[in-house]
Length: 398
Image (cartoon, rainbow, N blue to C red; front, top):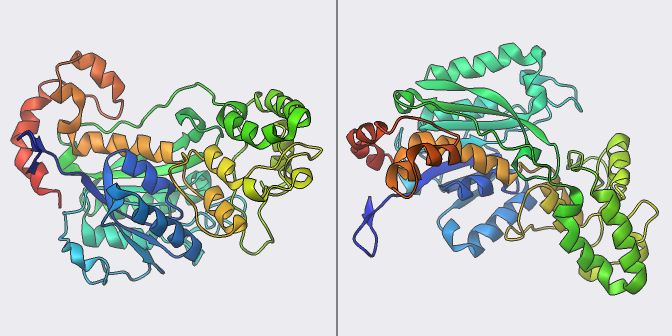
């Protein structure tokens, strides 16, 4: 623990390593929750360019290693980009990852553990070596199908064998976290038992307030239509009325094997059309706009990559690298940052209860503050337990 400029103790940030990081959706959300990534592992070259760009341009990401390549066989203690951290088992706070979804997706053959793209074994191997305080794994809802019950049980059993407690496989809908699309995702959380001795992990609940496509995109869509005078204004109003109806269908990234980017299969395209969006492709960036192609289409405008990122829950601070199709696929395959943030805060509330305002501030009653942090609820008497465990928590950070 260091000391800030006023002489007060400064709590070190929680550390994390993420595999299959993609373009950084989960990493960005966990960063917002208070985790600082030591490394992001990803095999896609365009996604790695995106990760490097953001790590290099955002000061509070300094020191994060972007590791491009296959995660299979990575030794966290000997790998050239990881050994500088001098990690020992138990040092790391969180091991996270959105392992490939095709083995469990209803859009594929659902081969599960028989699929060569299944990287759950690699995640479990890293957990065995690193012994992080918590493990978080994200996948498509298909993994919760009954046919994979045995495989899920085996994953849990393996991690329980390393001292982790099962906190649940939770199906979370992104729309409950300010994301203007349904996007259900299955998330597994397991936490070292000693941190749950006097605490209970609680999944974030989100809320029922819907964010419509119109509300999410109104500013960026107006910026696209406004230069086209009355025609643009009229078409904007038509779009806004249609897009106010609901949230978007689940955004998809598409397959590298099939042509350019679009917004999904026929049913998804019909749902987009009902919202005043043409899902047959992705619009050019604004500076390369071809009005009749990008904006004034019979079913409405196509989305730009930047607008797709908003639909996915990114803010404009996160930038994507590559051509239009490569950038769109990164966005479409991403994990919504607001969901990652909510789950990350739930994990942090268990690992670092001293960070919670109801334990560190007298500004509000304990009951009021605890409601602001649904991840963990405990009695105020926990303050004493936190004090007793202070040395252990301090030593846990790098």
